Length: 323
Image (cartoon, rainbow, N blue to C red):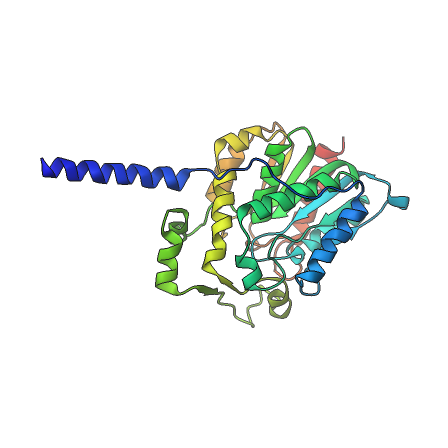
């Protein structure tokens, strides 16, 4: 009898563990300030960066190609990734924006470009509210909005496309963070996983970077990415992944999607990217495999096949988005 009671207790605990691990965080009632023009919103966000304060080159940025505050036919919203800044995509996105004269806004995610204490103070709703706010206001920049992003920025771009299937004109993303490549890193998805990680490795994670590694421009990398952060700061990333990394979210995405995948990505799982890509509700989608690259594909400070990336980006806009 005791044996069966013990088995029953373990079964209940296991079931509870799985329910908690897979429960999606609430995304309702997002609240943020709204303005009647883009410039007011932009100045508000810049003031927030000054107050933080954000490091130089990590604050928000706007590229304008329309006179007198008018909208261009197409506008870009770029969302950078976790631990990063606009430098993660600025090189490629600037070139595309200038080529097609598309008004472009680079946001700064909550707690980014400042310091690790600011970073750890944010939760997943801070991310969703800011991204939603940015999307609301970037519509003052263009008649049609193309959402683009890298890593966690790609994850958030997919969320926007699922939330606004009739408003997002296209999604162009690189290395969206849908899952860790390393099975060991996935422990943080489960209740107690972050606590276990901190018990084993301490509270602060320090990136191991070689200043002589030819794949990175070390001096610029440490200026625009966090190379030290609290493990606790991964909690919102875990929550955001639960919200987006599922078939229901993918099916709601109707906009054209261009996905860049680095085949040897050791940060975000290429297999999961390919799996979710197949589930997209979009009838116009393209997956481009990049063999020469890194998890970060759009940045001038990380080596990748920029020529192929820009060509595929341009071809997709010209053949799928603009017609």
